[in-house]
Picture 1 (tube, rainbow, N blue to C red):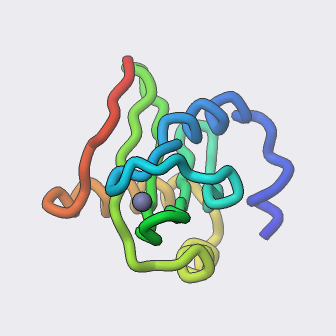
Picture 2 (picture 1 turned 90 degrees about the horizontal axis):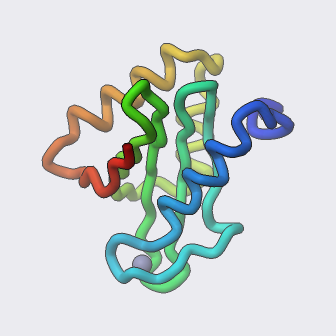
Length: 119
Ligand SMILES: [Zn+2]
């Protein structure tokens, strides 16, 4: 699980990204920092899991950096942090893996909300 730690190359992305998903989309509560966890990341994308302490809803969100800027997509999920870690951790970390996940999120149009796009 070393890829969850010590990758400081895009720390700014990470911190900005976490601010973007600082509130629960369901009840608007502010997420606690400990409830937002990075699942996977590379230079262009970062995947988070967040759990609302208030309504207990869980969110997976992916931040991507493109030439157009930063965008965040999120999907409500039943998966716990441990579940998602198992899911993500089952394959070697690679850009393809994140891209696949991004495609997955994009294909789930009816379930997900594109709640922030920042130029
Ligand atoms: Zn909530």
